[in-house]
Image (cartoon, rainbow, N blue to C red; front, side):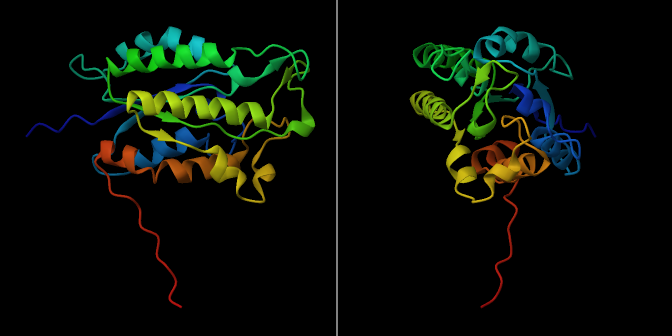
Length: 225
């Protein structure tokens, strides 16, 4: 009997997708890939992160990345997860310098990217992670701020609501924990191993993604009073 073709998820984004900062387990996307690989019928995950990528670079490689990962019988992947926006929020040269991609341009480009991606497969969008303003600038030239990250995450949510695309917000829940600064690498931008674990924990419990994957949420036992 022929084996069912596993679902395939393309994950497009920046260094967060690449797993930068997590020498222990390779980042939140790699953790998800390994977890699903160990489940019967679990989807195949392709982590396609490039350090420094912003919205425009991700959009430029969307169709090429998707088209060459059909894997079996020239099939297209069954889902696309976008994790982008943090690099676009940075100011160049000084705290009040120009943004790498201003908010209006980011929203317009994101709307286009989502439309293009939806023509290929169901789309999911991941929110942004916090930064440590105290150690900016990053690489001596890029200034990241919490206010800008919050604004760009709100633009992600706006575009997803408009397109009826599932969106997983990260920033509020991560910052709600008093230890969130300890989840960042020393550069103030990238997550460390614990930060990637925190994102992975939220991602693997995301109802929209689990429904797409045909998986049940992992239940957590509640201690008896």
